[in-house]
Image 1 (cartoon, rainbow, N blue to C red):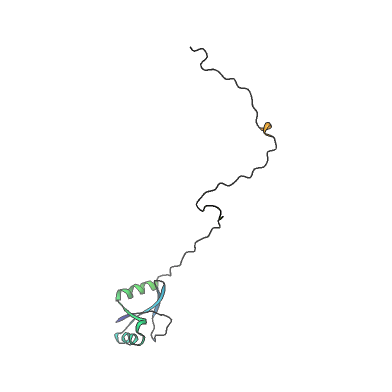
Image 2: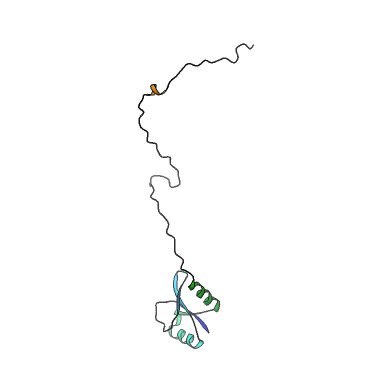
Length: 120
């Protein structure tokens, strides 16, 4: 038994094989008798590589697992005039006071005692 890896899974090689992703590319792989494997390699040359049993088993196991999806990152619109890592306080919107400053603040009289009074 020989195990083959097909570089271009869309090409018609005249044999059936399974397709999975190897790295970032799709590849075909399969198990064939020595006679069939020799004929396929003779007909298609560089497009077919022989792989060890361990690699074939790894690809077969990978074929049964769900495909890994990529995660989309969320984007945030930022003001280009501000530093991206800075934290800015938001300005408070305050209404104008209904009274003047004199009406809001009352100043009274206070009695202040001298702590040094009576000491020599």
